[in-house]
Amino acid sequence: MKTAILVSLLFTVAITSSAKRRNINYDESKIAPYTLPDPLICNDGTKVTTTEQWERVRRPELLKLFEEHIYGETPKGKLNVHYKVVAKKSDALNGKATAQQVMFTFSHKGQKHKALALVHYPNNRKERVPVFIGYNFKGNHCTTTDEWVRYSPYFEGITDLSSKLLQRGTQVERWPMEEIIERGYAVVTMCYHDIYPDVTPRKAQPRDLVRLSNLLPVTEDESSRWQAIGVWAYGLSRIADWVELQPWADREKFCVIGHSRQGKAALWAGVQDKRFKVVISNNSGCGGAALSKRVIGENVEFITRQFPHWFCKNFTKYSMRERDLPLDQHELLALVAPRHLYVASASLDRWADPKGEYLATYHASPVFELYGMKGMTSAEMPEIEQPIMNDVGYHIRQGKHNITLYDWRNYLDFCDKIFNKRGDK
Ligand code: GTR
Image 1 (cartoon, protein in one colour):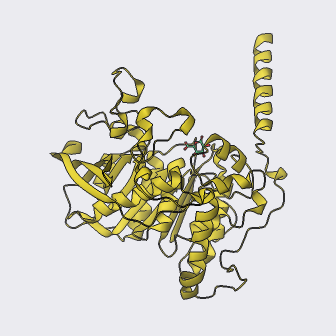
Image 2 (tube, protein in one colour):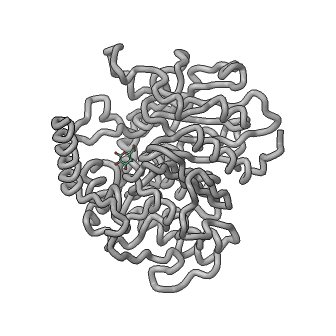
Image 3 (cartoon, rainbow, N blue to C red):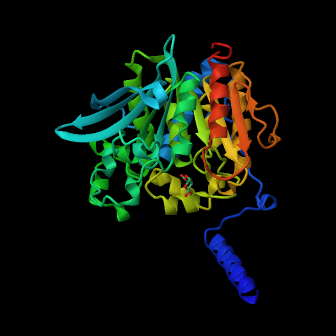
């Protein structure tokens, strides 16, 4: 008993001191007063009152601010990409889908980079279908136990066959492919490591050094140079380039989706690339959908120290100085308008600040309203598992940081509503 108390005491002390070390606050009452910038006020103080003004003046201003201070600049140049279907089967998922594996070979001045997409589209379709595009974390082989699915190129260098990294189906529950297909959607995934290996330069292995961004010219100014999130976002658009060419894909119905760090990338991709008609952020937290100025849960100091390769260097300047940020994440969400946004939180995901994710969605809403769309109408968060599905969607799920079937079902319902699919069948 005594030992148990001692252990739990030590544990508490350890948590408290590491929380102190990281300056992590979890107490709502300790949030210092902060002011959020109004997304509809231009840099010169002019108030935006028309969508024309938003698109011509304010939207580009905000995009530039996000490039400069958070995600870095996205190179404008186009890469050569060669696509090759390396495997195909027409009876995947119990005959409900056609599956393809498509190798993307990016090239520039003799340098090459490979990434592998795993594609499923419904066999039973009367017309072109909407498409979800999103990265997986652990390789295409983590989304299924089917041995037909090849290892993503990032994993090719692993020779130890007993390596956990090569285990199949470890994240099957995050990819309810069959249900997505049954609902009439296609789904395209790729391992995010194929585009930019998620390792700090310090921990890099030889195979990590190959990254898509090596092929692209970068800005001279190192402080606003793009890093992993920028490159992942760019990669999502390159996947959309391929999907656009497919006879089964409805080009007006692309949905970009991401969980956690990939939620951050999905938002940044969705903001920049207007082909994404629905932009879905699942538990994206700090540097994603959560307001930075609340400084609760993960903060700028922690995230930029732990993941120095995610954001542009300028972001680090706001470590312990979030209030000086000339923008906040509600303005990122606002940049999705007049397309559709869905933000989802999880009740136990305090690190990602669910309330901050909701408030950002709420404070982004005036920009959607400018277009006559309905966002969040109350500053009060909805109850757990009471989704709001206006032109903008939000839910908070019971449970931990994760993407679950519950989350997917809501995304499917939301997309059905947006794409008018209800009652189609
Ligand atoms: C955490 C990170 C979060 C979130 C998460 C994830 O360690 O602090 O910002 O992105 O990783 O991607 O799972």
